[in-house]
Length: 572
Image 1: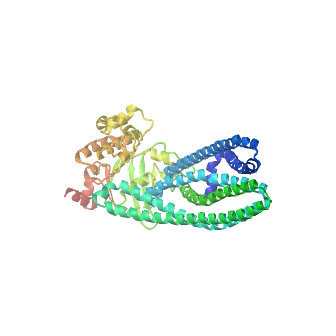
Image 2: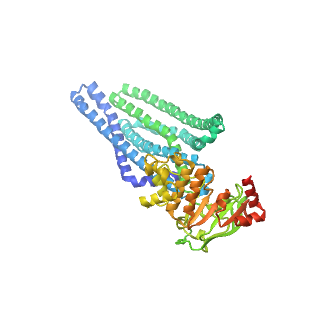
Image 3: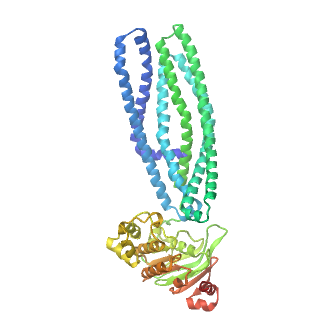
């Protein structure tokens, strides 16, 4: 229920529209009662007493009532749709904003497909609930109240039957609610798993096809889909049982009303018109009561989805600014790793007591086997993660004491796995400096050896690059990423295997672009190619998370250690 209370906070800014929708519901429900009451004079005065004046009144009164009721129904539907769309919009904005704020550890724990499920499927359930639940809880409740009032007006004794039916209906609903909530929760979790499988299938399509694993992936998806089907059918079984039980209970009440009421009419206790008006009202009550049963299923799904949304909104980022964090105004002298230790969990450290200093203007290369912790060192400087032990200092200040914005403003990152957005070339280059003028973007592209191929595109700098840059070659993507880093103009540059997986011609162009980028900057270069490593002022060799060798290319070759072995393997 806490999730529902929090959901109401999102509805509260639209309280005036909700009140207006409530007024429309009152009109719709009230006129429903009036239309049922009209059965009495139509039968008693028009059909039995042959009153023509009453007939003429009915000719304009009935369509007028239904016209007003129709307008009110339109008003309640439009206003509730407006509220549902606005609340969903705000939740979607808050959710995406939260995802942008959360640190990397959250994404390690939660696959992207499952996150997307919450932003799509769960928000859709909430939007549907915001439209239909008020119509049922408020609109149907008002309809029941008005019709019960009419029943008491027509025949007090028979109206008491309604108060016998309500408790009987409520008994099975409580049990159904518990079962439906459990089934809905399992279903929502499993649909998230399906979204994850879809995302994996799309992103890994090249691997799937190259290994001829299409059929295996189909079967894997079908298994997950079958599990979801099972959860949905459990939900449907519970939901489907509720309607016939309510219908049976309602039919017993109606049967009793028809029998007992007909006997009273035959005995002259009340008129035929009053009886049929009562019967019409009683039958009309049945529909909103049945809706309560159907709405119960949606209510349980909405509760589960709201909880899943707020679970993300309640996530605490592992990386955030300390109270009173300082601004890093300028990088002056050095970055120092002081006995740094890091582990993704408490049992398996991936960085072990690493010590080194990167002086301003110096270019250091980090080399080592795959999985040795090279990229992790770069991520620690950017504070994608915080060190488990030791410190990283910039100009003597622990980076934990600096604001994230000011720290990252001083660092440009170029990686092997380039991420480009499905926007124009210009947008992707200007990502490094959104306020840059067109001539600055052009200059950055030229320095990155990107201008020539960009000009050949049909729309040049306005050409859209495709999702993750799929319309570009690997070398083209790298050069746009380098142009992005050049435009950022940060004093510290981190290169994470930026020239790997490129052909010789592309590597040459990218290497020239990198030379332009590295000029007059402090560089931490993660690389495995000797051509890149030789350019460094100093080389650090990392193995199993530990710094095992340090020196220039020539010094490390003389040591005949790990670096020498790596060089020998590359020369073979």
